[in-house]
Image (cartoon, helix red, strand yellow):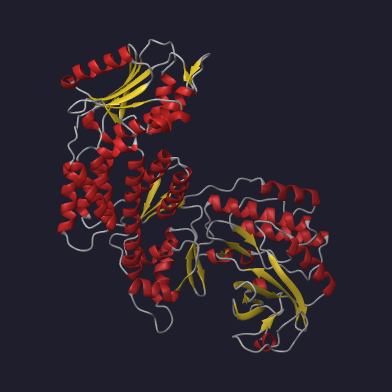
Length: 640
């Protein structure tokens, strides 16, 4: 293009002679193209009659860009290229290598994903959102500042040499190291930057002022966002349901953008599914119409893109296809992925509540079937993938709710989901676990039977859960609505009991919905609302109480525990029909307490729990209650 007229082009004959070293002209054998510098296989020109070539770094196995330069002063080229190769700035494309062959100087640059700024030109001019224009201005000002401070200039600042990456990073590339780096060259860089920003609609600056100090101040101001760029609308794209587009105005209002034509919807969806990246003409035609074109792309595609450009900003047109730059827009699938990533990280860190909050927000983005009604194979494939993501998020939500003790919520949510997705084994398994934790074993078994009736292979984990539920369902256990747990100081000691009880509640992982704590005349009572909550608190009490008691302050200790501190803990069914027996037990333990102990009603624990926790049965037929004496941690094994 016009911006590259000042650079020497490389003929095919010249490229054939580029091979194997800084000054070697013999052709390399094998491979698809010639070698440059012994490691870069030159493939093709990025544009016709261009001095820029796509190549491959054979050492690292990755694409790079080779640029040939007009031969001027070899010494100055090497000095500038060396300085560029040492420069590390986020807005400057990295120079990976450089050299001089018989054909002249060359540089090897990183290959950038994205689109050149000039590709955003439309018949009605450039219409960059204010936020993107601000990013471009700040980034290019920072890039030129870094170049000039390194003692080099760019030499050809222009739109084709500015690349917008999909994530919104702006990079200046395609330098001209053969030029000198005097004050006039730095002034030329700033003048060209000013012209570029003016084309994009930025306010006037002093970048072309005759006074060097005014130019330097203008450049410094741009890096700080001065002057402020014009505010304009930005787009909001929603694909997690029927395709919807709106423009959010600077005042916060949303103006719907009507995309009525189905084929136009399909084209827009394809661009949004690969934001900031080029989608080729062939890919667009196949993804929309379901066929691979035998010739040039149909003219209808260009007409549809031209119509979209009247309403939308950020559509880039390139010889090989189109791209839609959305880094400053709102795209619901990008927001969803950000939330999913954040939830995964929070879950890994153990912050389950915050992770669940992120999943909740992600689920709220879905408005039905993704891309509902959008035609074409590409939309159909995306619809399947996004629907799978939606269901996976529901599974993640259920897993987090189980970890948080929100069993009723899991049971309710998954029962509704299983109505629409009865064959989802993961939903079925999690629902059955929630029902088990709620004490609704019969419903869990019924759910399994429904799944079994569908036919097909049953996962071993689900079969194991089914066996556990059957064992539980057959066991002769009391299933009270609630369990009453008491922590009593048998001798009226003035020990502060609340911190110890709170520590056990936390160790058991009890949620606010699972328990209620209240003071009693001799200590504290806890009302537990599920069997699972009772099991967790019993385990925490038996295993952690010895250490907790041993840490209480005391002048005299007996067997490692504070002398005179006798704590009795009871687990008993709640309710009027059980109160008399419970009160009798507490009085008996208080009257005969010579040491701390835990007592459990016989119907609350199964044989496995009795064995695992080392409980003993109080003599009688049937057993009156199970108990465990609390001794210092070092003596604990003697009482197992």
